[in-house]
Image 1 (cartoon, rainbow, N blue to C red):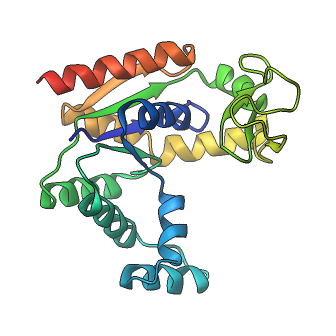
Image 2: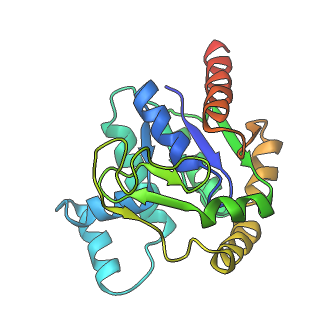
Length: 219
């Protein structure tokens, strides 16, 4: 089983590449938000904890998130996991590593999708997604073939995030550099880090990711 972490600032393309790996390799994408929403309505003991915390207006603890991830891993059937958006801090990275060790798992690779901030701002400002299937588009680099119609599912529910603008992105980038970018040095020291150009064409990034996974599979 190959488990990877995708690192990079908002807009680096982590979600797009994660979906390609799910489709092409049968991997499982672990999204913290999706797991919390699923757990809240699951009726399990962990789900009741999540519901109590969220209904109380409090932040879900790292311990709960790690517990949800551990449940997902135990319920898996040999599929590798993609951690996208987690861990975000050094404390979370330590907790994730300890949990994987307990579960008899490890990380095959931590892949940093490096970007140029100015180019990233231009990319984000033109981004929109399909509200039905989640496909991501861009005004310049990946417009829909038919105006206002999703290429994948035919939906006309195309959306732009309210914070997909230059000022909001600068705030999100600052949050990333303060809290998450230290993970790059952390995983480099562990010998797990690989770096690719996150602003390269989607297919080029996908090919480089595939090459890294194939190399790790051969070791």
